[in-house]
Length: 157
Image 1 (cartoon, rainbow, N blue to C red):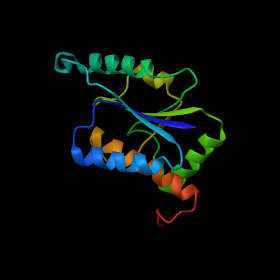
Image 2 (cartoon, rainbow, N blue to C red):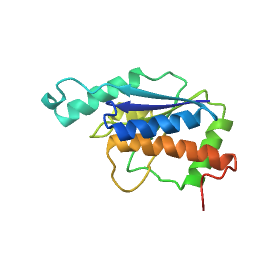
Image 3 (cartoon, helix red, strand yellow):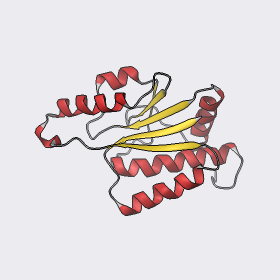
Image 4 (cartoon, one colour):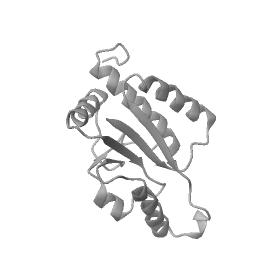
């Protein structure tokens, strides 16, 4: 199973890029992982929030394959502990899915079309994080999930 993290905008902070690269290297031991960054829309400040959400949604949907299992990272969704997320990761692996795509939307969330296409929603926390930080946190959680599934001494209860 290939895991894809699809984001709106590039990660600009060096410390976040370094952290993401660190966990991407670690993940190679367990799975194929790809970070796909959709560039920010040009002249985004000229759009209303609704127009921005719609245009970002169109860009997200263009990146998807019909067989993708789409999980929206949404702050209003159900959140998991790391061990429960590891179990969920395992259930996705056992289901035979070829590509599992997680999406971090833009600053104003997802369009109705993206919500309609999504198979599941997942929250990382009830707290609010920047969209750039979420990328690092999520890549680390995928790595943590694999170490939990392999009984490796990374996660501590």
